[in-house]
Image 1 (cartoon, rainbow, N blue to C red):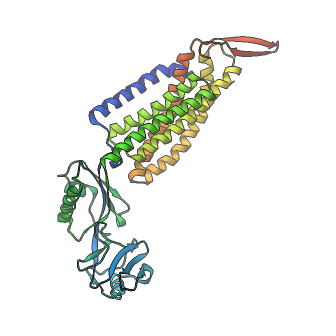
Image 2: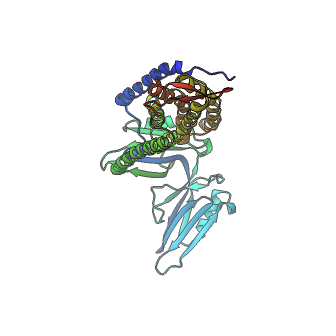
Image 3: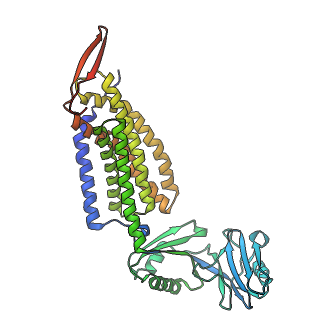
Length: 410
């Protein structure tokens, strides 16, 4: 005979524990706020590299000539009225040093490449400033190579920009291809001014020829507000649809228990995010929605077992049926959570940036989802059905069957 664990004894403690964590999370959110990422607030995001300017390219002529550094080489596009439109591609497979690349570029009529630093071309190739015009002219356009010997850290970037408000800096990539993501909150039309001032501070600190701007974007206030509103609507719509499905599949109290469990998991995750001031971005929102789907799946399995055991388990009270069902599904709940957790922890330990935060949020959600499916959903159902009685029906003298009496909860 299987061992039945008396989970119901721990329901009060579990409810109090969850209430304390959620209330603490609400207080933390009210006092410290949520560290919204740039997705949810107006601001600027910029990616820079501390690099070496290796080539200085200019053009003299009447044509329109643009230069781009693509993944596998350098591309020069020549166009204009009265000119022969053509594209000159110089793949890295044909050149191995800066001087060899310069010789190829100088072969284009009117284009001049001046070597600023001779070196072997890095595996990652070259790149240009995102803020610079790709059209060549008398003003030089620099081609950069990542500085593999650079010792600059994210703390150095933060220290340089400490005079600016609401600045977040993250290091991206490996040491040889290190870049830094800078996020700055802005209001009104000050974005361009703040960006220019920040770029000037970086150039003064590390040198104008050492700072390369890989990309930059702005998020407007209207877009961020729309995203917040749509995210709230998305989560609420998800909860309503889950309740409708569960009510059709089971019963209203089972459906409400499932919704309470996933609301609990969402609040636990938001509380955790507020506690550690993790950046709340669209990736974090995706983690919450992922856990909602995971949690409802785990809860439905348990609810289905409870409904099945009502008809077959020898019991006098609903509490006995519930404990039996939870005991039967315990190993499944633990194994499913652990196997999923192994994959999530691999992401946590071997990735950086937003994926690292995503996996951390998922880890908390997975643990909370397993816990809430047993203790929170179970506690609510027991509270609703605690007065449900069972009676013995003798259909065969040698076989005892047990059936739940009709009650207000059915």
